[in-house]
Image (tube, rainbow, N blue to C red):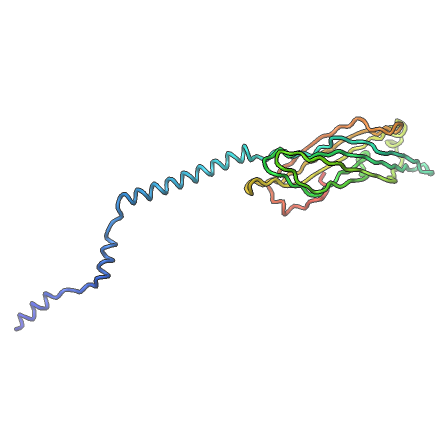
Length: 238
């Protein structure tokens, strides 16, 4: 009887739940070769496309989307009125000057150029004599905006010195103007540039016939890759 019990004990097997047996079978099944191959091809194509997009962006940034020179140009300057009165003390001269300026802003880029309020300044031998406002605006891609502004100086007092004495004796008053605009180029919200364009012009006022001659301008541009939201507009940049 004891032998029968031993046989029953030796023939006892561990019971495995059906659900656990199915999970073990699933874990042991290897991933088919064609599925591995598909995953590798998909990753390779995605990587290749990403590299192509990056290369394309770099090429466009140096060609089509490259920031070009927005330019402010004083295309003309006309003398509207001029008078010079010597102070009775013979120590100073009072000038009344009115100048009409034709200004253009050209944008050669494929994106619009927005510029903030600025000014044009008039100088006599390096001394600031007056200013005129340049209102904010926007120049569309590949376009030019033209406008006019007036520089009016009343009762400008100049102390008589050697330079002024010589200028009055020659009946010629040399003047210069400085114009500046500051703005932003934004190409598809990816390529952003902050640009500062300036124009410096010189001319001579002939007192005898109140005419303006020898008009000449020099232009400059500075492009920076900075966030213009942190830049203060409207200041005089010289």
